[in-house]
Image (cartoon, rainbow, N blue to C red):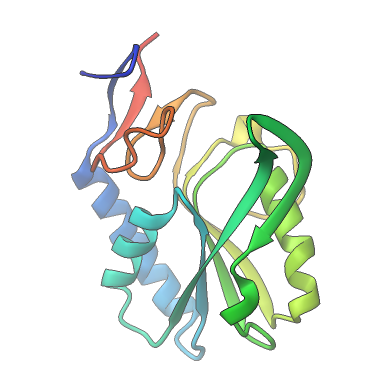
Amino acid sequence: MITVRDKDFEVYYTAEQINSKIEALVKELEHDYKNSTPIFLGILNGCFMFVSDLLKSYQNACEVGFIKATSYEGMQSTGKVTFSGMEHLNIENRDVIIVEDIVDTGNTLKALDKFLVSYKPKSVKVCTLLFKREAYKQELPIDYVCFEVDNKFLLGYGLDYDGLGRNLPEVYILNE
């Protein structure tokens, strides 16, 4: 059990469980992209730990890039997702693997998929550490999933609570 700010959390997935799932996922990705040099496109901020561990194990040729998705101005949601960081990435006619820490409603993914079309990728697949199927509201397939999780508040391994906890090596669940 840990406390972050005013909330208590308990371990949901240990570092060992996470690493085991990532190793299995890497084998699948290496098989699927053995004849390609994909670009892993991480969505900041939460994906940084997952991308790092994923690519430390991935042995095939690949590239990595990061973009940031923003839908807030100050503390208010604008209702529109904007992306920054594509200016140095060339994804035209490339296999792109979007890497997310967690997929819940899928609204950001839908906006990102629409945004990436103008860059003319060869293919776009989605890879996530955590998938909240119950919360998902889009049609876009989620191609690679480490864990399907309940629609609960999670922390750690890239996920934060009020800016804290991203650095934790486990995934925690809010103790309600």
